[in-house]
Length: 103
Image (cartoon, rainbow, N blue to C red; front, side):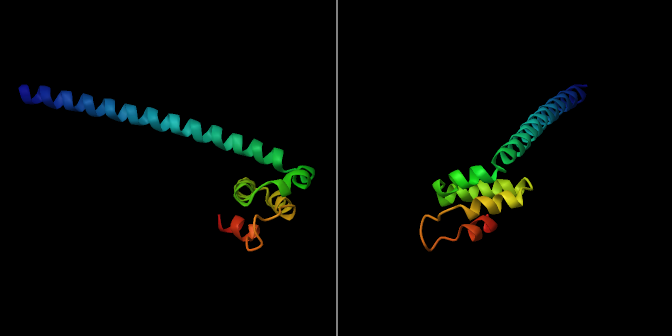
């Protein structure tokens, strides 16, 4: 009988652990969904040739790489190319297009 009780306790502990994992996965999925929505909204705002013209030369290479990577991932290829077209690299050796494509 004692063995059965121990087995039942272990089963309950395992079930609780699985329930906690399911809750954690659910929360992680919700965060991912919110992140994807935020990234899409961000990409839509920065899919603006006028903004790229006005601000593109002010971004450093790292900022430009991050922006264009997000734009490309969100499906805004033309916007990424537009931003790169208005970017002034940090150094003459830097190639922002190659960096963006590599990222």
